[in-house]
Image (cartoon, rainbow, N blue to C red; front, side):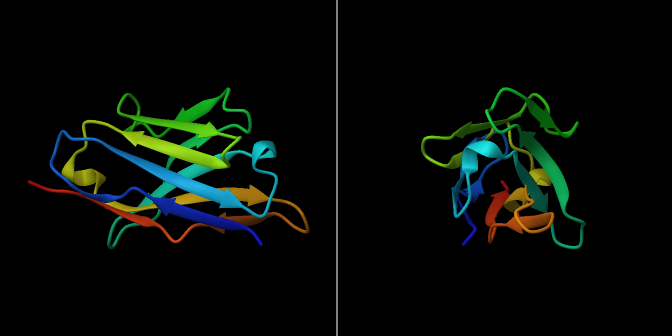
Length: 119
């Protein structure tokens, strides 16, 4: 069964850092791209970052470029999101995501991890 389990969220002050982790299982992790999304209360879920299957290519939303870094360790079936210089507007639930086409094209999501940035 496909599983994505996020961890590493918490409460931090503006300017501090967090590293989120997403442990994946139930599929060939090293063959697919991975993504991080976030969703704040009352807002739509938005893409934060994406990384190719090998980790050779990454993409970021404009507001995260220069502060966030996505990476992966295929030997550990884990994708990471390093978040630096956090701002209050980064407060959201952060979700790990992948798209698989085993039977049909389908999105898979983790349960999310809460990140709160407040002074």
